[in-house]
Every structure is written in C-alpha cells, then in structure tokens.
Image (cartoon, rainbow, N blue to C red; front, side, top):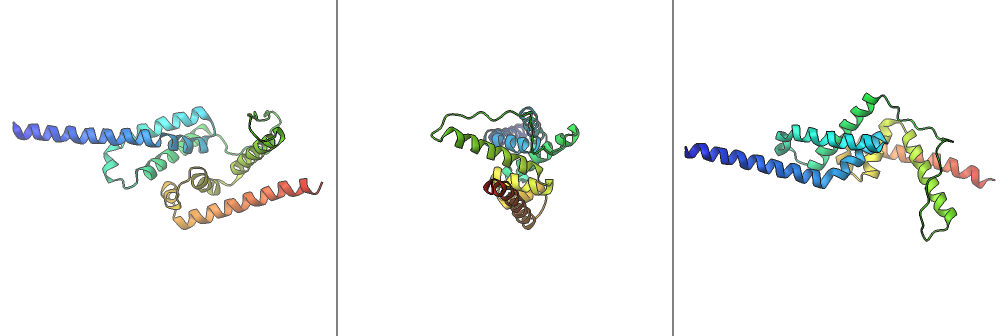
Length: 192
C-alpha cells in the first residue's frame, strides 16, 4: 500500500507543478499572446478569442511543457499559428486600403504638444500602420514580431519556423520598404 500511495503522491506533485507552470505562463504572457493575435487579426474580439484558444491548446499539450526550453517562444509560436489559422478560416484579406474616406480622424487626447502636432502624430501613426499592413506577409510577420513584440531574431525564427538570417534579412527589407514609402509621402509635401 505504501508504494501505491507514494506513486499517487508523486503524480499529484507532477500535476500540481504542471498546473503552476501553466498558471505562470498565463500570468506572464497573456499580453504577449494577445498582441501577437491582434497583430495578425487586427480586431480586438478576434484577438481575445485567439488568446483563449492559444491557452486552451497549451493546456491540451501541457505534457510537452517539461521538454520546452523557452516557454515564451513556444507560446508565441502557438499564438502565431492560432492567429494565422483563424485568419485563414475567416477568409479575411490582410490588405488595408491606403485611403479610407469612411474612417473618422483619430481622437486626439490632451497633451503638452500643440493640437496640430498631436493630430499629425496620430495621422503618421495611422499611415505607418496601413503601410505595415500593406507589406508582403513574409516581410510583415518578422517585422511585427521583432519590432512591435520586441522578440529577438532567435525567438522570431523559432516562432515562424525560419532561420535567424532570414529573419534579419526580412526585417531589413521591410524597414527599407517602409523607409522608401515614408520618403515618398514626405517629399511631395515638401515640394509644395
């Protein structure tokens, strides 16, 4: 009987430690998972659903946690795949038109900057978001993960399933394309 009780106690301890790891993962990385999902889906409710689905999958595959070296990267990869799968299922295109006349101007909050400077900053941010969304997917993905999510090239490579050199190259090309697009937007205004 004693051996049976020892085995049961050990199983309880393993289950408790796995539960603690899962609880810590949720507590520490919920925001990361949500931001990754939002970066792909661009809708608050869809990103929340993808975040929940990510943690459900983590719970389902919790037996693999012991073999995972970097929980953050593992979780980011699952979140990325869930978001990409949801995006494909919904059949949404990631392209956003450069000029949307139906979209209202962003709300400007009080700050020390003059109102026209704050509005200009909001418009530049909005334009940059549209330019990033217009990038080819294979350039946009590493750029978002490395720049917006502040993941290292190694983490981005593991998340996307590509090598680090490809990550660095794609981020460089994406930034170069954005720089050219921004320069094209600024130059015509300066020549007026």
